[in-house]
Length: 233
Image 1 (cartoon, rainbow, N blue to C red):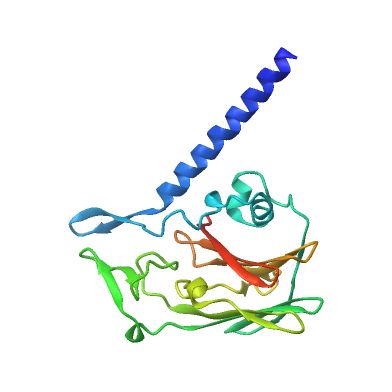
Image 2 (tube, rainbow, N blue to C red):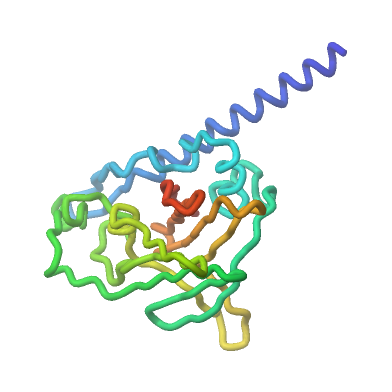
């Protein structure tokens, strides 16, 4: 019995240490070092941890979001939850529609026009820092090329559009791509629903390394609940 208790304590300690190491890694990823002619300078990333997976306290949401996200894979949650995934229904250069039974998730994107926005810069290299007064998710320091136009869900009867606060700082959205004309199409925009039908998750993995990030919007009982955003590499 004593050996069993020690083993459990050791296992729990290892889990705690692993979580701490991952948290440190995530925090380090949120600081950007920029090379300039006058040397390197650090650009702090103030998007913060408030919307990170590691700040998600609801055990059900944590398990389900962790089952399909890169961040969840870091703590061994990949594939652990029983979720139904939507299938690709239609795809164009500007829209993607995912469908499951009577439900559809529609995402649209469009070009970003800097002249229509207030851009703030940081440092001598004109590092793009904030857009319309907000820190943003895209390619760090670069002017976005694409913006997210809207995300909405249709359940066969009613249409729910995500509020502007959930999508207005999301840039460089990815839909689907092929590595070659013969390879299978891989989609970076996905949707999942819980077995009881109460929770719907809309997932995107956007931009590219070293600014690759993932966002999950959570809809519970037909209402927008919030989102989870983290770097994804």
